Amino acid sequence: MPADRWDFTTAAHLLNRAGFGGVPMEIGRLAVMSPAQAVSWLVDYERIPDNTTNPAWAQPDPERAERLRAARNASPEERRKLVQEMQKNQREQIVELRAWWLQRMACGPRPLQEKMTLFWHGHFATSAEKVRDAYLMWRQNDLFRRLGTGNWLELLVAVAKDPAMLIWLDQAQSRKEHPNENFAREVMELFTLGEGHYTEKDVTEAARALTGWSYDRLDEDFTERPMWHDRGEKTIFGQTGYFDGQDFLELLVARPQAARFISAKLWNFFAGTPPSPELTDALAATFREAGNQFKTLLRTMFLSQEFYAPSIIRNQVKSPVQWLVGSVRMLERPLPPPLVCTGLTRNLGQDLFAPPNVKGWDGGLSWITTNTLLARYNEAATLLQGDVAPVAGGALANRPNANRQFVRRMAQLRIGAVDAGKLFTEKQRESVDALLPALERRLLQAQFKPEQEKVLRDYLGGQPELTDSAILNAIRLAMSTPEYQLT
Image 1 (spheres, helix red, strand yellow):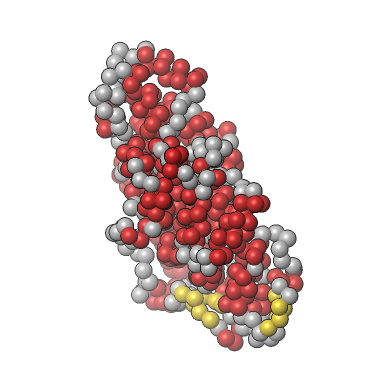
Image 2 (tube, rainbow, N blue to C red):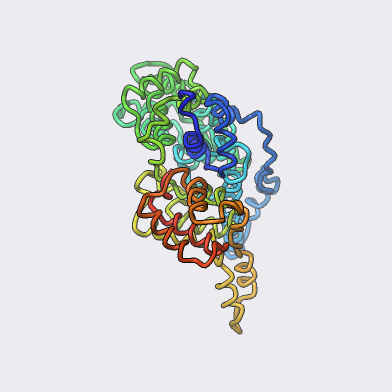
């Protein structure tokens, strides 16, 4: 990245893609650094303290064994009630987990660490709908956060032994008499190599190698069951030996295609478009020379000229999570309450901890449909002006038979309006000519299209004065443009 091309626009691009965007002051701090310094601030995030606390329940449950034993010994009716209570607790904890993670993305001190955690969540797509344990989903999320920019083999082994993954792809039940092929297949097709780079024989032999890697339900942890492992000779990728799960994963990562596959996928995630074959080869070579360390690959990507090409900047459709977190950051407002966040991202097409399938979310233009685009416009009004639950709560409260608990719950969903006074200076609010560039700088880091500028000028010019209400309406108009859906 040439230093003479480094400016507010390219700094904003880096923060948008390697994080979740920021306000003009944050972008300005990056812009006065050198490109290498700005990239280092994002990539070498361990130097920045992170004092975020975990959910109170995100720890081993000492009473789990007793509860399971009680459920086994209970009458059918008691068991049904216990199961219902556990399911209710799990649903509430997943909602809390989503909000906890969104809060880390919106306000945490390490944007790239959370962005990489989001990447791995989509890559190793695991759903709470099958795992049914919020603690295990939190553990996997924490695994991605701890190892997500480290070594490829270390991460892959940790994921293969992760309890949520063991349950999700049925590896926990795999034994020598009946090897389960789900994880063996997906780890090659979706996680490391891609279609066409392995054979069906590789799948069956790899499944044999993985037998015995299982899950201890009482301890909620990985366990290796030697009696379940197939100790026979296997042939994988043309190599023969008495392979186990570790051997198989080492064989996988050693294949040149594994470096090409993950390098291309990471580039596509951050750049918003697949890399050319030549760029893929160059990135993969860098990755392999660095010992399959992701930090070196990310640093190379973010400092490359290709990453700042005009065809790359502001040409990626925001995912629902990027849209929500980025909007909250740019509007300098708190995240909505947990239930509202869950409903909002779900309406926009991305339910964290519940990907649509083992492939995760398709991303790109698939985020935009007639329904989800309209939902984005409506949710923009919600974030700006509030009014999510007060209307519903007030209407219910006036009914003679209203459920008091539900009314109280709805009252907790109150969302205040954005404070327009802290978004723009008095000088920026003096005139339409002063406000429009400030709107561009905060919301797009680019210029409005002529037709959009005309709409905003006509609206703002027709106001007696630039009140907070008028400014919020102008922001809503800007957030309802096609350009705002891009980053």
